[in-house]
Image 1 (cartoon, rainbow, N blue to C red):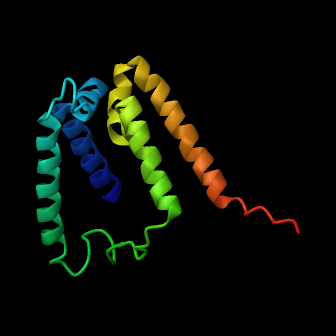
Image 2 (tube, one colour):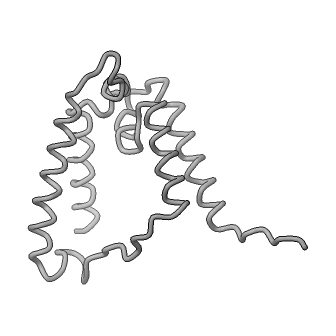
Length: 143
């Protein structure tokens, strides 16, 4: 049952990305271009997401546990450290340059747009490189 619900949630999320225009990099780049051809329509998408998330969390936290799991999986770490800031900066730079973030890029992949066909492999290479760097031991300092 859990995989089916996960698939349906992903399908609704993907359809929402397509319908909102977030899978169109030109629309995203126009939203980010506040001094040029600015398109503020994605602000409504973000506002709707904030309201939905706010209400959804209020409803979910009224339950003692999730429907399909024994306990809520809430991150325990709250530290703002260098890896977090570096990752956020790289994410923002990639989003600004490519007009995609990971979710909308996957929804745009079936369109086979040239930007998508470059972005997805580069994103996957970045994920692979990040995991390799994180799992490799720190180099020893020579004295």
